[in-house]
Length: 303
Image (cartoon, rainbow, N blue to C red; front, side, top):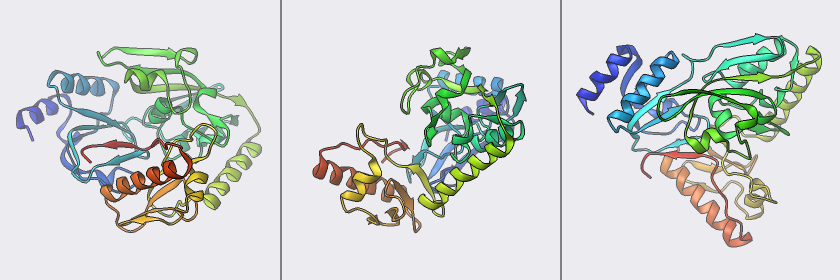
């Protein structure tokens, strides 16, 4: 730890917004991960901007975190600053058929607001366990819907500290990618454009999708959702299942018996267990089918 740097952080943020040695297992849906040197909680886009610019000036590594739903943090933790954009930047407001939300807003909360206003088109996202910021970066999607279908505009912070409003046509959204990801922008807020609908029909579809998730996904265990990206022409879960890996374990990590596309923390797994399991699964699938699985889960720290 660097006391001078910590003091500089506390000039930008209050003491209660700066934590040191924070265990990352408390902030990821995998429930694994060692301590981050610094864990900070900006509450405004100005505080976020000043924190990022400080890190860049001091050449201090930093990572923007939502609710940690697509992340595997090393058991050794992270040598740098974790900047969490979540509960302190999660305001949502509806305006006509548009919903304006900050990057830390949960997709489930945005879907609930859309339902409240009888706006349809966001039902697909109601069960995705992530924040709006991460969903914009990776064009999150499920059950035939994806963010590029509903985004009107995304406001970002670029690497130089400029705040830019990017209209939907310039977002370059594809499968699990966007201009935001390519340029390393940080999402601040977004405008979601929906259509007027029937409240009962919207509620019914949300309930139907929820039941599908409960039936097919291992929601009772910590995981990061789908572990691997969908290879072109295939389904990752089917390839893993056909490789005979259903229930395959390394330490406390396991390929879910319910859905082979999910790696779960079944019994006090470590990040090393999960990483090794993913490696072996990828190796086995490539040997059997000649298909290289690309992780959807991002790794952070030293493995």
